[in-house]
Figure 1 (spheres, one colour):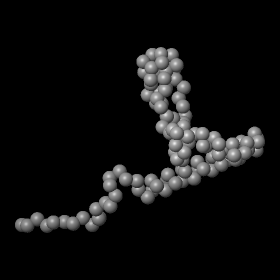
Figure 2 (figure 1 turned 180 degrees about the horizontal axis):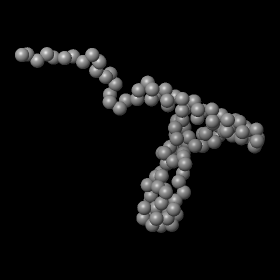
Figure 3 (figure 1 turned 45 degrees about the vertical axis):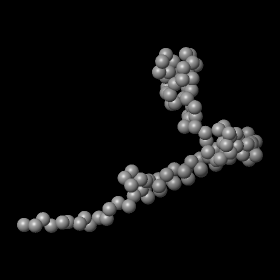
Figure 4 (figure 1 turned 60 degrees about the vertical axis):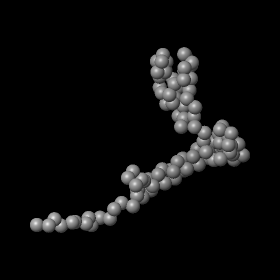
Length: 111
């Protein structure tokens, strides 16, 4: 008997394995929209309660953007921190120094 070659009914995937799906992209878009609403709400509170203005916000955004010396709309990567106790460089997001076990403050905005 001659074996029959079966052709799968599903076409081969057109995206590489691990590539974001339409669902992944939709979830990210929803998260970005939510973060934009939260940011706008927080800015509204600061303006109303503390009298800040849009120029101050634009100035702060530019200062953050320029941390790496380039005004390019991107945040510079955070450099590894030094332990306040022993002075050695510790990995980002470490809660304790890997050398002396000193508790460390973690920067919530570290990238």
